[in-house]
Image (cartoon, helix red, strand yellow):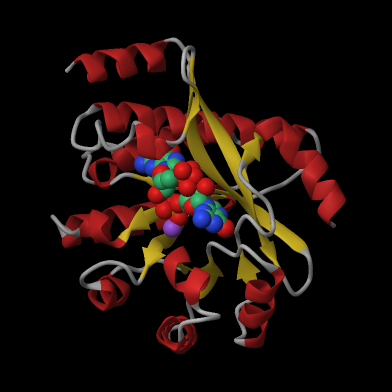
Length: 254
Ligand code: G
Ligand code: G
Ligand code: MN
Ligand code: NA
């Protein structure tokens, strides 16, 4: 309860900010976009990662308020970059509870209308497979309604849920993000390598796109390229960084 009050105040006082982690085409060196990752600039404790504060509010309406702030701030940032001549794609993590909200699509539609110079396909929403658990048909409708607006969807942490293949089959997401646990260990663990290969085969057969997460070394990147996975994200490419640092990082990468 105290926790909630404190975080509500943090939201009102603008203590949250978004870091951005680049997502690249490892084959061409092109920067495809960036994933927005929330941070809490805590006045006493410094910058806190989401693992420190999101779990406490995941099952409350505050996660939805925070989620709306994230969408708003990310679109505002996208528009700023656009004015600087930088047209990027941004991926945003959507909490399960947000997806279940009745007015989720309306909120996004109204928000997009405030940025007429942004293309809706510059926005990608990352959802956890399990986010759809409670009401798969509702999740399906929300995804389709957003796709009609031009927004794309990614299944985040793919492969870690209990029913990954069911979600994969039933949710029309364009992109799969291979969970970093499989990528991290694939060089030593043949089982994880097999899973990565399996996900790539599956996505090929169903014409979905794939992003590998958690690429920490060049060896990981090279292996993924050999397997035909060109898109990647990870500390070995870039760590999440403040928005102001991204344009210079992009200029130096390309
Ligand atoms: O940023 P990190 O580096 O620590 O992220 C940890 C977890 O927090 C990830 O699972 C990520 O999906 C989640 N996360 C990061 N930013 C957001 C956000 O804006 N909204 C939601 N719901 N989850 C987020
Ligand atoms: O669940 P989601 O994929 O949204 O979470 C992304 C999380 O993974 C963030 O906490 C981000 O900081 C972290 N991350 C991104 N790249 C790497 C990496 O190469 N190694 C590790 N260990 N974590 C990473
Ligand atoms: Mn994510
Ligand atoms: Na993920």
